[in-house]
Image (cartoon, rainbow, N blue to C red; front, side, top):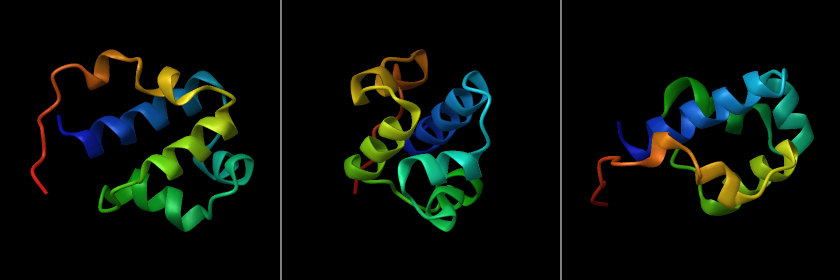
Length: 80
């Protein structure tokens, strides 16, 4: 699993845990649906920390809470 896949899965897991849709999350965090859908559906978007912080605000969690998950252990390091 790479970083993009882990971020994608973490967002989906948090939406499920909070019983909200991805579209509802977009409204809650002030992102466009296309931005969030791009992260979730295509994996083609490389979300910035600022985007992740907005997602966290919409979920009412900290960035630390977002990354404090087994998904991020041992992920493949990407060279840009």
